[in-house]
Image 1 (tube, rainbow, N blue to C red):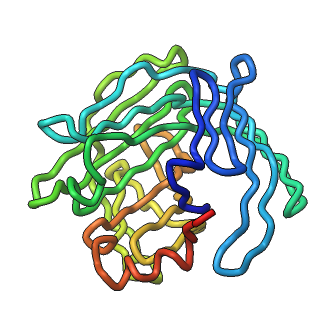
Image 2: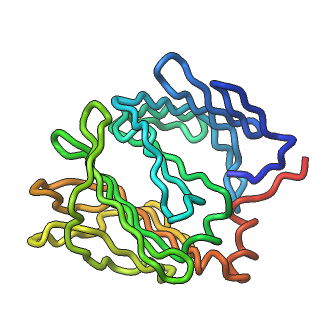
Length: 236
């Protein structure tokens, strides 16, 4: 929740820390220790998240022809346990863990993307599409089985979703006879939205996690000037 310089970053083979927060492996479980303050109101945010993969994805996918940007679904299916002390709350359920990494900032390579993930009875479906900088489209439609193996699938038809409060465009994929709807929006930011969908994919009624990202909006000087109010930059 806070941008920090290189002097605040520590890492080794199984531990990564940024300021007072950290990630480490405890056997087969990824333990995330959170010790932050929210913004713009400085509330304490402290607790532990435990992510236990049920399957491990071993493939990183290139998102552009030069492979400057890669996406790795590390744990397409996982068990997640959340135990917060500030605020005092907790829950558990099914989860997912992935990583984007590359050789240049995301906004240098893309204009926008839409991503969603849904747990099916036997597989996990991940749908990923967008436009690279300059307008070239890209898309991935994948299923991961319980052993973490993946295979390409034909993407279902594209469906537009309502714009967010910040007028960020949202779209998803769904079966031709489906009418996906946004059931909750967790994050509604000037350039990003994360939402819950009720939809139908590959013949199954599912709840999906969905995100839309507008990197052309992110590049805007107005949005850039707003960022420090939501993610302060530590100078100590």
